[in-house]
Image (cartoon, rainbow, N blue to C red; front, side, top):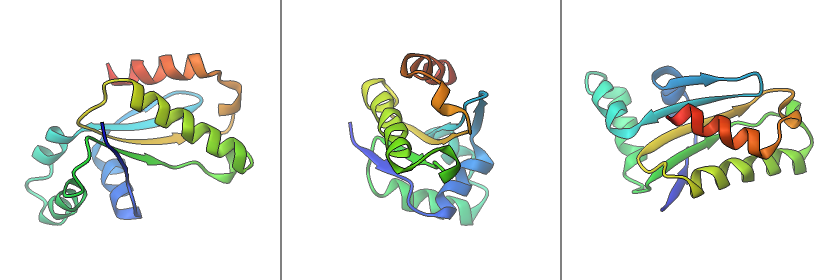
Length: 123
């Protein structure tokens, strides 16, 4: 399964405005299935063009990681990003676009609880 990242602000904004939001006290996931998003954006030529640009990369999953400096120092932020990539790589998230945005206090969440909450968001 190939995973591609969302590259610029426009791509993140597309999901922020049009995706399903799953909130927890520790993080927020913006999740959308690609067919649902393309159907929803057919009437908006600007957004439709942006989605086509993203999909032209040919990945199975598009993942955006938005981890601010408030979360911790660089090694901690990179750890959280690696954990999120690991979860989406090992589970069947083919055909999704996801943005992961942890909140302050995320460091109190163990990996097993994080994994369970991510699976709950996608069911």
